[in-house]
Image (tube, rainbow, N blue to C red; front, top):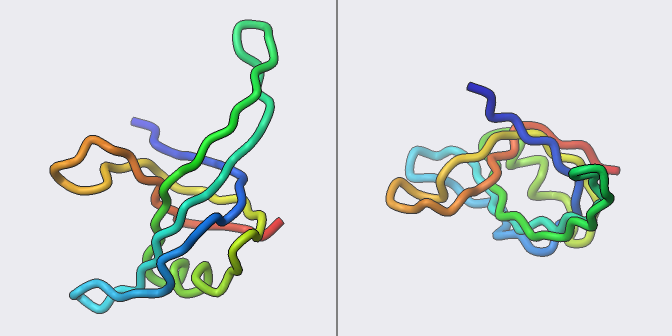
Amino acid sequence: MANRIELTGQILETSGLRFTPAGVATVQMRLAHGSEQSEAGRLRQVVCEVEAIAFGETARKLSQSPIGVQLSVTGFLDRKSPRSSLLTLHVTDYELI
């Protein structure tokens, strides 16, 4: 099954670089997205905020990005925690724009 997300946005806030109990680097952030999308033959304004998380080298690099920077991220969706149905975007790659 496919689970691949591409999203552009702006960093609104970040947790800063942290480490899991296993010693893996991680950073959590909130991204703001705004775009115009076509749906049912009409244009629709899309504005949302997305919770995102990155691990490893991606987290190390991403944690150095300042608040307000625009970026394009690629990743996948997963539950925020095993007992939650809320979604979080897991960033596997990104590019500053």
